[in-house]
Structure formats: C-alpha cells, structure tokens
Image 1: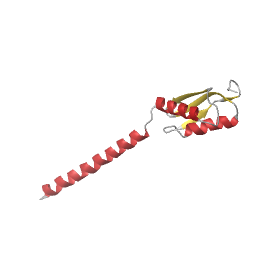
Image 2: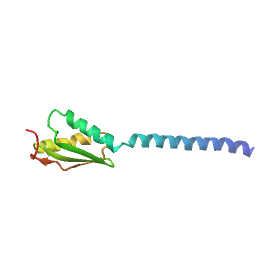
Image 3: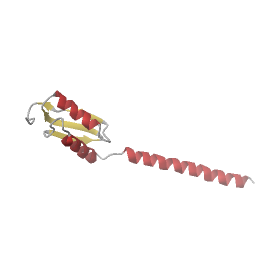
Image 4: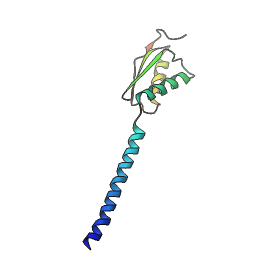
Length: 106
C-alpha cells in the first residue's frame, strides 16, 4: 500500500517541478534582448521621430545599456533622444553623451 501512495506522489512532484522550470525558461526568453537588436530598434525609433532631427546621433548598446553620442540642436532634442531610447524593449539604462549644437543639422 505504501508503494501505491509513493508513486503518484512522485509523479505529482515531478510534474510541478518541470512545470516551474518551463515557466522560468519562457520568462527568461521574454527578458533577453540582443544588443544589436536593441541598437537597431533605437536607431529606427530616433529616425522615425517627427519632433527632432537625430541624424547626427550614434547609438551603441552593451548589456542592455544604450549609449548615445553625437550631436543635436538643443537640450529638448537631447532629452527626447533619451526618452525615446528608454521606450525600446530591452533597454535597461540610457547614457546620453550627446553634445549640443556642434555638427547638428540645421
């Protein structure tokens, strides 16, 4: 009788543990973003913006941190670049080293 109770309990425990592992795997897949993919998405987002010109902004991503360099016309455009980059999936942090005025398109 003890063997009969032990086997179903083992099956239930195994099912619960394997189900939990599957959930963690799916969660980790959703949470992982390739740096190249993030860079491309930020570049596309900046290029599509109608409020500011970001043609002189260079985007680099490392471990989910986006680095912005180059130049923009004013402080509003610099802040907008940060805000837009933060909206991209997978971005953990934005370091905005964009300069004002120098080399920015008129």
